Image (cartoon, rainbow, N blue to C red; front, top):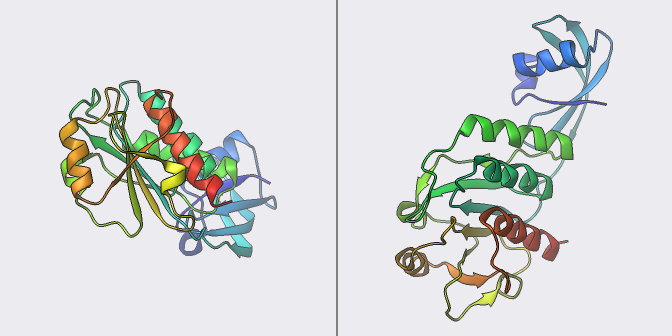
Length: 231
């Protein structure tokens, strides 16, 4: 049964224009067909289509199923890569694996200074539906590194970087069950000043192994590590 995303389906009883077009014009569903709808907030709705036109899709909700969020929360904050497709890869695969929140950071060595939030949001929605997750990851506006690291976070905070110093692996630093915020550097890594600022604000320095990973690989690796440890 196809899944559609509509955050206010209880109030509207109608798919958004984009989802309605996909439902009626692409999938050619019609009145009487059953669909699943996610609000991205933990609830799935089984619904029957009551009106299907090229521009509108009205539904009658039959059943609801609410799923609890995992007991741990993962926030990835990364310096965006120059190649936009690599940032989109993190959004897509991260959602499939179990990402809760995604931030992009303006760092000293960042080559990309602009993020297309609308494009990333669409990828998050598509990946959520494809992987049948009940929660849509939160996407934050592009933030300055210096300001971001000073924000409060209820959980463990990590910064993964390539400089030589006393670092443990993420696996040995993370405590199972805790929320985790992980900083991933841009191409060229964080600057030494950024690393020091993060440490001053309670971030724990970690390594992701002996290999030098691309930014998007490091983000997916870190996210996968936390999820595997909590499995």
